[in-house]
Image 1 (cartoon, each protein chain N blue to C red):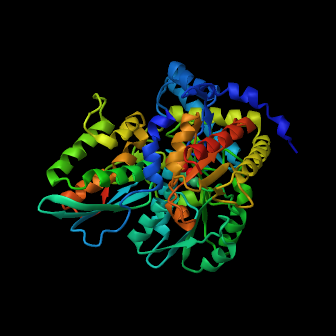
Image 2: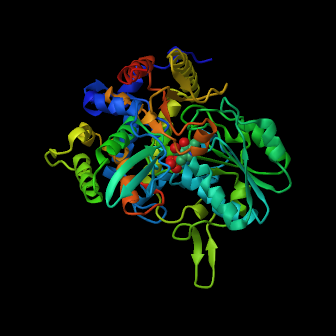
Image 3: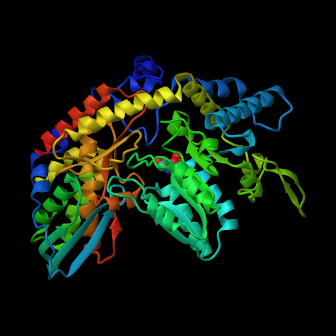
Length: 145
Length: 411
Ligand SMILES: Cc1ncc(COP(=O)(O)O)c(C=O)c1O
């Protein structure tokens, strides 16, 4: 069970998060907060003509939330805003429903083990909630509650 | 002096049926006692018996059942009085828990004695429930909340406390034992010093009563609060002890049945202590369950419990100190029941999940004490908290669990 949750890819991304930096020329950004564990997450987007050129994040969090943010930034690069919204919805379903696992989530499938750990779902969704706030222009802090 | 062997822990564990189960295929190791304690059979049976045989409302029936319920309820008040060594039964007010006890004092004593520019003193070790009620009061009254700082071990800086006291200080509210770090505060000295300024002191005993004998007359505290569920009793019941003279001078808090002697639309005469502060039908079963928990603790003996737990805490401290990359948060010279720690390169939330999969229940997070976390520069810790039914084997399991955590994260 430990390995279902702490998949190799998750451990890798939590130790060496990708795109883990401030994005100076971001034109969308948002900050998220998980009041349960005190974790914070900032997401920065550079979007041009509806396409996400660059996306980065910052924040201190557990392995699940850090890896989720890191893999999210990789998955979003080059996507349109519409595609990003679709991905967000699918990722949410992956974690929170007991429907059969979606197929087309690529590397993000490593989070499928999280649905067995209800106490950790919010860790995995923090970056994504923050992404949604950034996409929808609600620039203020959001909470993953 | 009672010795460690004076506790027959394997017999004691049989009284707590919940402990004898498996979690994720491993024996349950319950180390989250600071959040809530488990209940012995006698408490569970007292609740069952009450609802099976004795249930009725109290203080109002002429019938036999009501008489029985009232007697059991009031007998439990006597048990709490003796448990705390209070002078009188009327000084024991039943509330929902420590939180409600503190709010009661803030809303009655606080609102009548704290005015603009006055000061209330708390410590940097407090649980949110001993911070927020005072913040609310200070905001309402334009008063000032002053905070006694703590040192790197997590001990209050007593000389700083002395400097905080002045003519404008109207109340001091500090914990007896810190829930986040386990620090035992020098409450007797704090109370003495505050009394030198004629300032009353509220002690939040939520984390103390399960670990040590508490004597409110010896402490000379003015108010003392605790929660039943943290001393092996039910949830939803707690105690506010107050000195009779102070309680008598305080306005009632909530209005309703039981707290009045007579009501007309022109004027209501309030009831005597303790009923003045017990409006409405109380948690009767909860009170009776708490009484059963106190009987049980009397039977085991608080001194024996303290001695046993001191030994266990020392064993645990030494065991954790030997783990490389682990830092204990809270290393006060006087501690009870709590081992709070962080592991390099591992977030407490992840440690908590892996420990859970090993059957070990701990708390991770800020423990409702965010200012304490800020003081130590961490956002959260992993906390193992003890009760007298825990054993050295539980500590060994924790240590093995932590090694597992370190393996998974290769730290
Ligand atoms: C030191 C301290 N004070 C107060 C409380 C609040 O207790 P309750 O939630 O039972 O009212 C707690 C509970 O964790 C505590 O540890």
